[in-house]
Length: 335
Image (cartoon, rainbow, N blue to C red; front, side, top):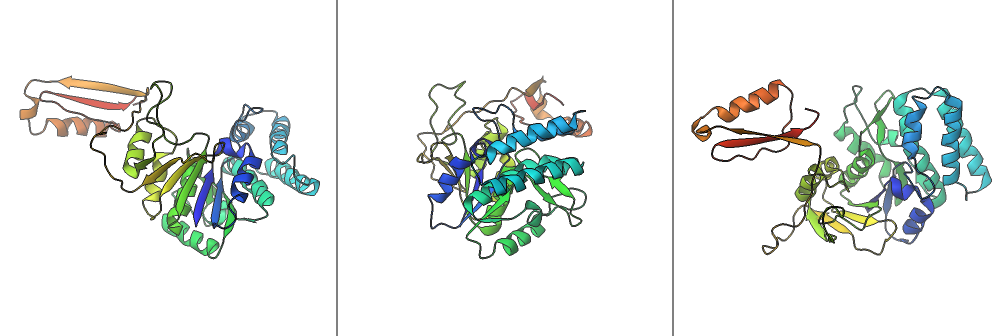
């Protein structure tokens, strides 16, 4: 069994995604979908159009814009399905004002349309991702639901990014939510997790800052977490934490170059001592405060006092290297 998550850049071209899935005739596969992202002809993500619906004064006009976007997603499908599809979108967006419901519809419509293309089962995310009433994700309940709903399934399509509590109220995972959705399903099924995006894999550096970066063939979960924390954004770092609960690997693949081997992410790998540095990442949203104090290392409580001050002010530490008589505290600019 493989869990395949297709990101927004992929779902902007559902016919390409369909071709990839249909080329694999025998493998059991659960497909997780993001909302359609930007494309050559579309400069606005579907989710951004839905977010604008919450802010606009001309609601009817914004609904028409959303309908136009999704009509292009199903333009090549049979007319009876297109009619049903677009009528449901109009009804949903006209009659429901819940922000979480509206924002989640991009993934819902994207997955529903893909399931029709593939002639395969559609499972709404509210059936498998369980949240508590306060919006806290319930991993244990979700894993149980996933195993129940997908038992014996060779193929199914599920929207990412959202779930529901016991009362049916929609809750969102937050940024990178579809990455998390796919990871949670993969971990619950002990399956490998394919994450399809628009690059050949994780690079050894940002192409805008590093000359001729290489695609890394394999990394560990820990290395990817460090890279994501440092600014490498191919795979959300939180989704790696979700995968720790399972036994499978992660394979990053390019929807638009499926023959590329991609990057495989494992819990452990062989270490090449001749290449101790495998990648570079960087962020520009951090501030470093360096404190110099002669004799700092001789004080038993110096570091404890600094940490206490940061804690009292609710400041999270991003990085904290020390030297004999200095300490550097790195934190987010907003703090």
